[in-house]
Length: 143
Picture (cartoon, rainbow, N blue to C red):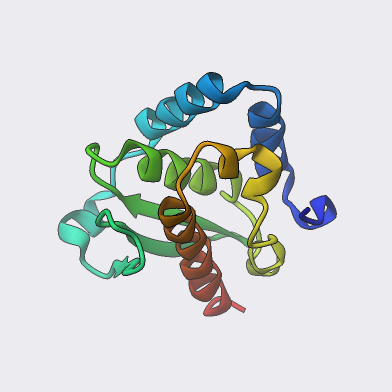
């Protein structure tokens, strides 16, 4: 199990939201998050300056920016990959404004607490783990 003391409050609220859901509700909630992924800001259109998460079967691109003391994560994930898009969206929302140190402290397996390991294939779990790893690597550049 992950160390919940290392999880920023926004992400912890999302975890709690998923914990209260059954299998079908988790999938529906993931699709809702997929629909919430904000469009890329103008300066990132065309994926300029974005890093590809190579371990994902779907094309996932990430760019991190500092906003005040915290970070903002921008993702480009195609709508044809709703699970991956939903996970990227919930991470972007849950870690928006987190400091680099807070992002680095998020346990790699925090998704287990959400029950995602029960609804996603091992291949998909590897891909979503890679997304967080890339976020951490980009956060490290802001330390």
